[in-house]
Image 1: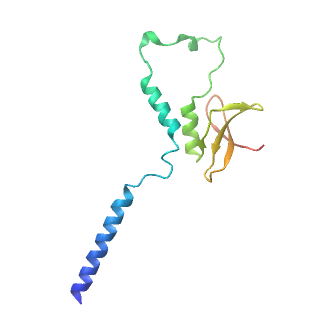
Image 2 (image 1 turned 45 degrees about the vertical axis):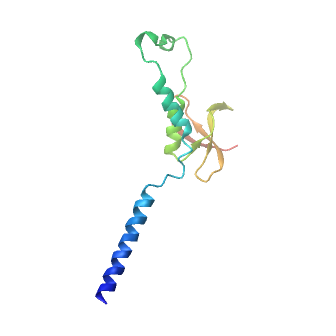
Image 3 (image 1 turned 90 degrees about the horizontal axis):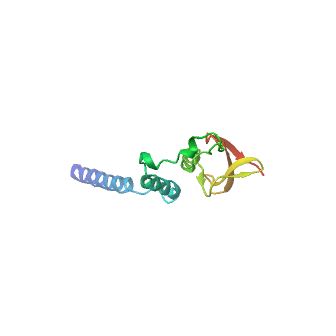
Amino acid sequence: MFNTKTALAAAALAVITAAGTLSAGADPYDRHLNRVENRLERRDARLDHRIDRIDRRIDRHDMHRRYVDHARVNRILWSNHYRMIGEPYFLHGRYVVRTHDRFGRIVLVRIDPWTGAFMGVVRL
């Protein structure tokens, strides 16, 4: 009796250990949705950072104020459980981005164009 209980407990422990190690290596369900962020990170790695190649026009004040970087917008949306579909654009005076919400529906999210702050979902 004692030997069968020990053997059964050892077999159960082996099954639980094997199942735990196999499930730990599983890919996340949304691993394919962050292609935009990966592409932007690769682009940043290719940029030329030499001091003589810097575009000084952005330091002048006669140009318009620059909008927030798309990688920052993507990070802000990810932290709020939205997945970016396209590029941000102005719609009726608002800076919006087409996104998927956590349920997979397509929604427009309002973003502050200069800081990248999340301002909410646009109701049309």
